[in-house]
Image (cartoon, rainbow, N blue to C red; front, side, top):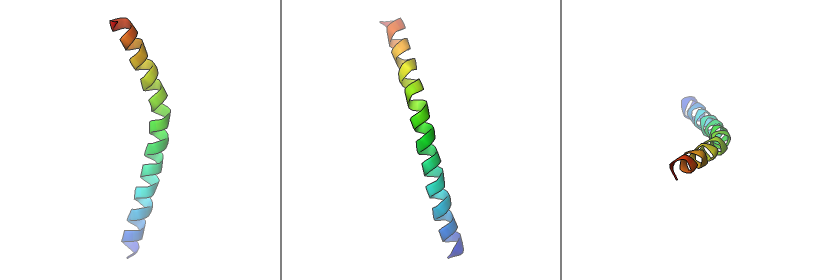
Amino acid sequence: MKSAAAKIIVVTWISEKHHVIRNRIKPLLTIHSMRVSKELG
């Protein structure tokens, strides 16, 4: 019971961290892909 609750907490925490990291990386990826498309096109 205790381990299940801990697992849920860990999963939620990781998913929140992942969401934040993805939101920070997304603009960088967008800028990078725009630069690449300019170089290719």
